[in-house]
Image (cartoon, rainbow, N blue to C red):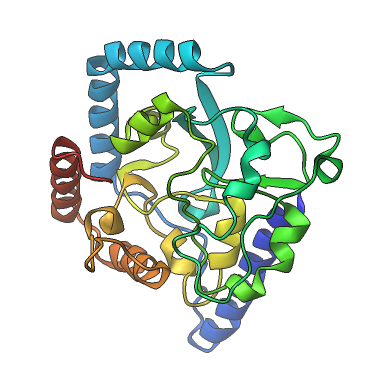
Length: 291
């Protein structure tokens, strides 16, 4: 168990004990880790993901060939994500980055679009001496317990934790024009095709078609507090409310808006809301929108 996983579980236990004390006078126990997925949602997930996997199987094959032709490395990569009830599972995506992503770290400094002004950069230009002895995986350094790998950055875990307090207002990470992304990867990301393997996650029951986005362990740990913990007590999904709620002149959401929409979905999700979100997602995909 790495440092981040231990911190996450410790936070959950503390909040659970606090909730027990809060509801003790009513002889009720509120377990914030328990959420039951409605049967209608699970049935829809199985039917949708099964049909999509069969229908899109030729697309899967073409994408796999394109990835292998452009760069070395596995076609699919797995990363640990936190879903409903803080369940940790292997999150699947088509590989969209070069395997030497660590060499491009200096291009990433200060490019997090959710990072407030005046906060530390999420990555710096680490020397090879600092990175020496690490095992490289699909999207960078994934086999060494001291490194954290997101879809958008790589950073030593101790360095990440040391910056946490300054970054509490921006728990989400996103880098635009990431130099580590391959040419095929840019096309996959533009049309969200790199997300297609998550249909397997949906069929297995790791997540749903519609729900709050599963987060990397360290992002989940930073979001685990009395105010935001309820986002994990709701369905985790391939697409969700904030993906289709573009706001502002640039059509982008702040970290605060994302958190608010995640909490809103957890409180209000229903079959009709799911169908509305799914329709907007498919419409944006056809119109070449970024979902």
